[in-house]
Figure 1 (cartoon, rainbow, N blue to C red):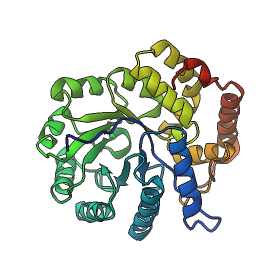
Figure 2: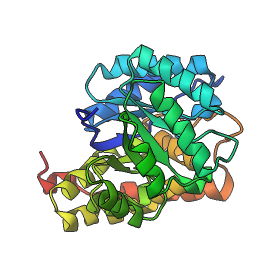
Figure 3: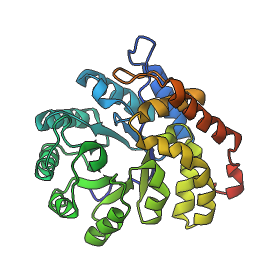
Figure 4: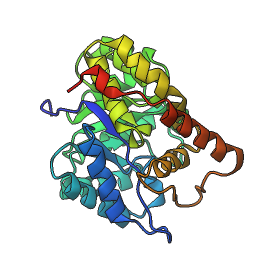
Length: 305
């Protein structure tokens, strides 16, 4: 497991649909390919932005197979694991392993709000029943359970739990992880609007929603941060930040998919209960996108090639 090379910008990709809300595999594959062409370092499929919980098990696995085939080994493909019970999570993880997915981003049990002890047990059972490398998705804001430093110390005993997507919205936790564990975990920033700060504090990567819309700018921020060129990174960051804030609100999926549609990169269609943006919220997101386009930065001046 120490050989995994998870670093860089990993978009949590959307799942594209036809008008009847069946999965549009062709559009999903085209979107994934374009993201890789534009420089992303990995793909997260069937995460929150991919509407994991809006799909049957069979649909999820069909999407993963299509994404894996399209990626063709160019970058790692990690699947979200967002199931309602621990046994379902174990079964799904085994299915991901069988089709050759590179790793798992495991969420706590859905619907039921776990205690920390229950979340740790959930993660342990997935790890002990599956051979894939595992990323813990720690998002107490959304899922109501925080895996503390002591909890991560318990999980460090599982050799295939190798990474954490840190989404507490408290950047101090990133420093605490490194202080407690050194390089035991690969740490990803998991909140778009504090991603640059997270990279500055040592995260090796950024799992992002808005990267689906502006992948080249996201990759440029990452590369500049890795090179310690923070003043230049901040120029892109300040341009990007108003849009990145959309990742932290309940309608983040609709916002991201609407921006994808405005950019000609996908469709805004989502499965209910998610409905397309309307009224003032729709107008606000469109205004943010239009402002970003009007003020877009010429990335060639940063000499990143």
